[in-house]
Length: 285
Length: 259
Image (cartoon, rainbow over all chains, first blue to last red):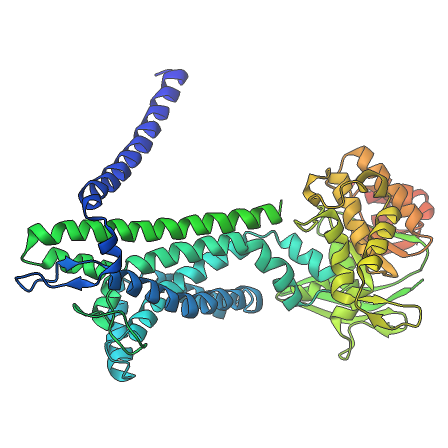
């Protein structure tokens, strides 16, 4: 085979792979859209799930799962984001490059790969029973925070390490303290990378089912009025709908909820893109 | 301007003995060039003078570096104060990814400015603007950038970026400026501009420059120190070092038989 046909061959292999990815994405999104769009209505967003005449929770809307998911994400935002970002900053900037900090990062990397059901188990054992949180919004939110804490740390570390060491030297040589260097240079310059990591992690948290299944959701939970109430959430609602015997009523509701969940994640990512572009514009390399 | 007296300076990076018993006195209002082959410790030496080596894990420094009569390695010395009074320019231009103005205004913003009575106060907008203009003029960059101070520093050419870094160092009002191979990433024209600037700066500052370009040392330096494998081999007037080296090792390097 000559050089040119080899070139064409590999080009076409790569093109095929790219096409495959696009097709899979379009099929999944299209399938959910087609099956779910029929159920989209004002009622869907304004009413809580209600039992139908057979007692299955397939009637009504999905207000409480939507609000529940947003509340869970708010808790994750409050707990996991500051802890993850500042924890990673500490390990990178102050921990040094020694055996202890390398061991820390090994632990963090491994935690990032732990299956979410394991976190659910930790949540139910540690939070729900040992610390007496009960099956609650708080327990579920904290468990979700556990899941994405390592993801945020790894994303923060990578964003920080992408800043050339010469920038750090420039700041220090001008007499900036370590904190000033972190505050004025490291964090702002890595903000777009950190934000991307945060949003991707939040999306992941929004979609997780296993951790909240064991720690805080309930079939007929209303919108929580306190942290100790149980909660509904979109992924759990979808799971419930697939388990209901009244399939003809339940499956369209599951698709509608899936559509809304994807919508929430898309909105999040849009927010991330806007924020990221703002930082990119501010700091031009 | 400040003299720098280095006494029995030893530096280790873990097991590696990078500088061995270096004794040298660098005078003010002149340019001192540090030359020597790669790995001879010249960068390590210059980084001892503003304690940049402190940032490197496993680095151990012994001996004294006396600036203005004070050993900067004394226990009660605040390393940030040292770096505030010594400017440094690095091998590759390293402006912050901000505007030209903000690059230079950064240090005065965090340190404040000192008035005639020696009191430090927060820099006003007016003072910052004046300081930025003064620094850029001093670094011979003002005319090229005065209309685009709010543009990113990364829009500048490499040589302009390096002069911006010099202006940024001047804005801290140092007495000593350290140059660590400032022209190694620049073309000959940009290099010539920096060299002119160096010669101009020596009237007001103590200037140290590390270079592996021997012609450059010959062109700009009043005194030259030759390092080899962590030892200070020879130190003297640049003319004497280049024309009449006393040490065999220096002669070998100067004449290109080694290095």
